[in-house]
Each structure stands twice: as C-alpha cells, then as structure tokens.
Image 1: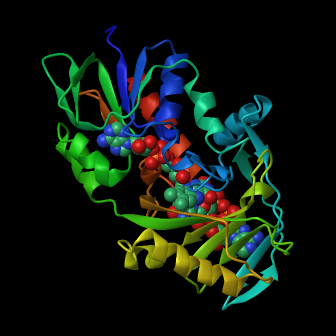
Image 2 (image 1 turned 90 degrees about the horizontal axis):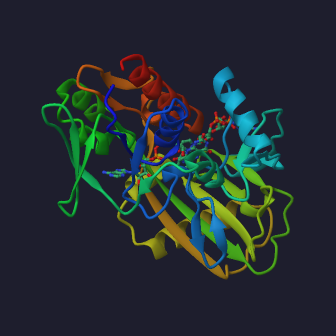
Image 3 (image 1 turned 60 degrees about the vertical axis):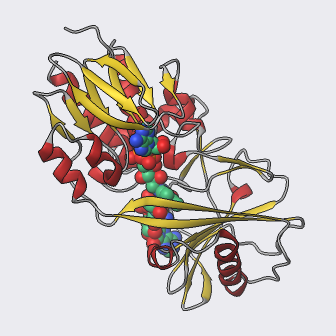
Length: 328
Ligand code: FAD
Ligand code: NAI
C-alpha cells in the first residue's frame, strides 16, 4: 500500500467526515480549503455581534449511523439540542407550530462540529485548488497561485458540485455527473437589536414571502450574543432574483419583510450583516451517496450527492471514505 497521504479538497462536513474516517483507519490525510477557516456551510462568521451561524441553522438526524455519530458529538460537548419556540407563517399570518422533532446545533457555535471532527488532521487554509491531475502513480494538486501540492495516493473532492466538476476532469464521467447538478443560492441577513424584541417567537418557517426562515440566534444553547441577534434566510427564488443586489439593499428588503411578519415593533437594528451563499443547496436530492473512480483513485462527495442537508453531507463523506478503503 502507498504511504503517500490522501488529499481531501474541502473542509465542510463531508470532507471532514471522510478525513476523520480515513484518519481513524490509520491513513495519512491532508485537507485543503480555499477559506480561512473550517466548516464550509456550517462555519460560523465572526462579527461585531459575536460568532453567527449564517449557514446551516440546525440539523436533524434520521439515519441510524448519523444518529449514532451525533450522540457521540453530544457526549463530547460539540452539539446540543435546540428546542426553539417554533412558529410558521403563511400568507403573512403567524401561528405557533410546535412539533416533536429533535433539532441539533453545534455549541457554542455551529462550527464546533467542524473543529471537533478535524482533531489533529493537517489542513491548509486559504488554498483554492484549481487543478487535480494524476501522473504515473501519484496525484498532484495545483492551487490558484500556481503552487503544486503532492504527491498524493488518492484524492477526494468534497466541494459543491458546480465547483467540483472542474477538479474531476481526470474522470470525465464523474465530472459530467457533477456538472449536471444545479445548486441554488441563499441570501442570509443578520440583525442585532440593542433591546430584545418583545416576542416569544424563536424561529419560524415562512411561506409565501421573500423569507423562508428566521431565527433568534441566542435562543440556541451556549450563545452569548452581545445583542438580540436574528438570522434571516431568503428563499432560493428571491435570492436568485436578487443575486447581485448590493448588500445594503438586501438588508433593507429582508429587514422590511421581517418587520412586517413579526408580531412586535422592530426598531432600527444596531448591527446588520448580509452574506450570499452562492451554492447553498442542490435544487433536488440525489441518491448517489458518493462518486468514485476507484481505478484512478478519485472520489467526490458532498451534500449534493444525497439530501442537501448536514446529514446528507456527513453520510456522503462516510460513503466516499468507505469506497476508498474498500478499494485499497
Ligand atoms: P460545504 O460545507 O460547502 O464545504 C465545501 C468546502 O469546500 C468549503 O469549506 C469551501 O470553502 C471549500 N472549497 C470549495 N471549492 C474549493 C476549492 N476549489 N479549493 C479548496 N476548497 C474549496 N442543512 C441542514 O441540515 N439544516 C439546515 O438548517 C441548513 N440550513 C442551511 C442554510 C443555509 C443558508 C445554507 C447555505 C445551508 C444550509 N444547510 C442546512 C445545508 C448544509 O449546510 C449543507 O448541506 C452542508 O453543510 C454541506 O456540507 P459539504 O461538506 O457538502 O459542503
Ligand atoms: P426539519 O424537519 O425541521 O424541516 C424540514 C421542513 O419541514 C422545513 O423546511 C419546513 O418547511 C417543514 N417543517 C418542519 N417542522 C415544521 C414545523 N414545526 N412547522 C412548520 N413547518 C415545519 O429539518 P430538515 O428536514 O433537517 O431540513 C433542514 C432545514 O434546512 C430545512 O428547513 C431546509 O429548508 C433548510 N435548508 C436550508 C438551506 C438554505 O440554503 N436556506 C439549504 C439546506 C437546507
């Protein structure tokens, strides 16, 4: 067996899950990410109002294997249950919408899960991989500055499908599958109020509106926000329509929707922030698990291979690692 490490591009939940599984099986792994930190869409943004979860808000677990992993994360103190006072809004009408669903969040922020999964696995940040090619025996990765990284025995591409297809060029069938996946954007806005809003609502699923979700950030366990901070998500349709709208206007419009919807007076926020997720979710679920060219030693995983949720990303990372190990 080759002693060259396995390269994994992407430190979202899929890449980290694959890395952890391979590392635990005794294989050297090297992670790369174009961002300055871990977690991808479960990362938490540092801001003047504290660390904010602008991407994944919570997650559920339906698969037995994922449920087992989440219980271990809970025992390690990386996650906790979140039981918001849940509402729904239809046609502008708010109504309580309590349910029995178990919902999990990272503590004290979503990215705690990513930090926990990384452990002592080596990672190179601020490194956007632009090319992945195989020589006689080994793989080489090239980054946006032209620097080469390698040699690697195998490569796992764990990034959103539209970005993955270029890095899968050595395996044209895999590249074509990734290229066929459409992913939709989400505009996220955070608002911080000096005085807590006078509402009992902690989170709301919204229909028939520009918004599809809103949540009181510090209703999640372990947060210590300086302000009363809220996170709003626009629908995919609104986000697509307003993809290039300046951030100030995105904030103004979504703040307007929020103020109309919520059952209390909304003063001017002390803090605002907008973030555009270009590849927020696949437009439909798939059942690939992960993509593999075992002969070449090239694999792809990510939420887009399954459900477009945290659970789907984790299961896809598991599947990529399983298929790689099976072919060693
Ligand atoms: P990602 O998290 O996208 O990770 C990919 C990583 O690859 C990123 O860190 C990126 O920087 C890196 N990367 C990309 N290209 C390159 C490159 N060329 N070189 C190096 N690195 C690269 N899921 C839920 O279950 N519940 C929710 O409530 C929920 N809400 C969401 C709300 C929003 C606004 C968004 C955006 C997502 C939400 N999701 C939710 C979905 C969930 O966040 C994702 O399914 C999951 O986190 C995806 O993980 P991943 O590892 O597949 O990809
Ligand atoms: P879940 O079971 O809590 O929610 C699934 C969907 O069911 C919700 O979107 C909502 O429409 C509905 N729902 C659930 N409970 C409800 C209640 N009490 N009242 C009214 N409607 C309710 O969680 P699951 O299945 O794990 O889904 C994850 C969440 O992540 C979803 O809300 C999804 O929309 C969101 N997500 C958002 C993304 C984005 O880019 N904005 C990307 C990926 C996921």
